[in-house]
Length: 164
Image 1 (cartoon, helix red, strand yellow):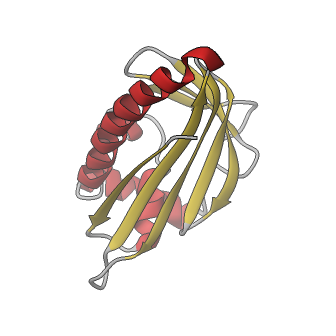
Image 2 (cartoon, one colour):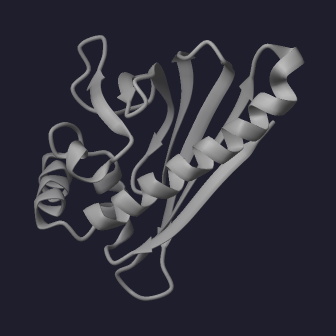
């Protein structure tokens, strides 16, 4: 099963780095170049294990994902519940660890997937690694910029202070 990964060190502590990663619209759109539309489903108002999220990507594709883990400030994991026809399975996890310097965080984002139909899987997964790899690198670069954006940081701090 293919895996794509991107890593960045950001100049904020893990609690704040995690909170930035979980910001929601409209703040999310300031830093996340992948997301064109995103909202919680089923009446949820904040992330958490079992919560489902609808996402429309910059490519126009949609996915409903479910948090399978939610452990601030260290990690979050998700799995696809419903998504593009060519994904048989899709999941991902974001980890946040203290960085090499005080007050920094190493963010590691990893996705794994399996394509269908099986007959096209070898080709489709090579394309998927290239495309998802490109997208995850752009996305984590946007995240790093968000970790330096005063408006994004203020929203993340408000979320921390409200217990979200």
